[in-house]
Length: 149
Image (cartoon, rainbow, N blue to C red; front, side, top):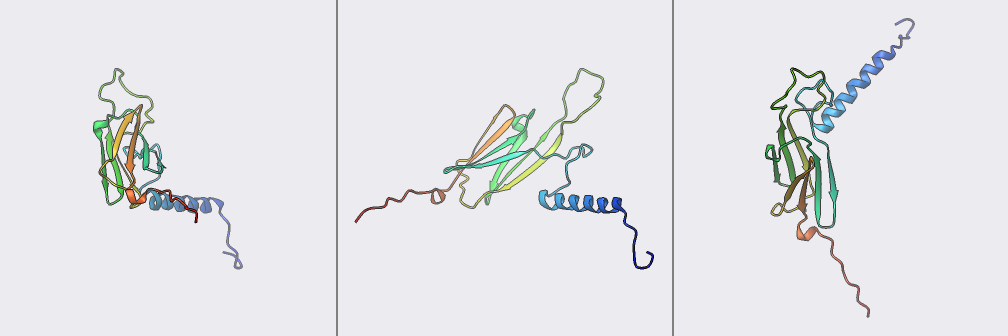
């Protein structure tokens, strides 16, 4: 520092921004940000849809056996976990590039307290797991008739 001035280093600012973004990813998603070098750590993308009767989750799990997926609903938290295994048999001597993620995953989605776990359904088709969680009767919208005098 010369005469109360300090030298500006843009690379130091970018490094600080990167550290802050990684901290944000860890706090928001509960883990490390995704990167190709993170072996075995992956999280399948999912969508949550709400209808008048249900919450519907669509989870992308291409190449997985449905028997390798566990689904639980406890206190309005729907948990999806499982493992995508690396190729069991290959014809070639080795891979030149592997971009798909393998290993264990765990997703937890908090749903509103107005769900019932008694009639949850799960279907797997074309690499997409669809989970339908019915709303509790008291949570469903009701039509109220307005009567004239």
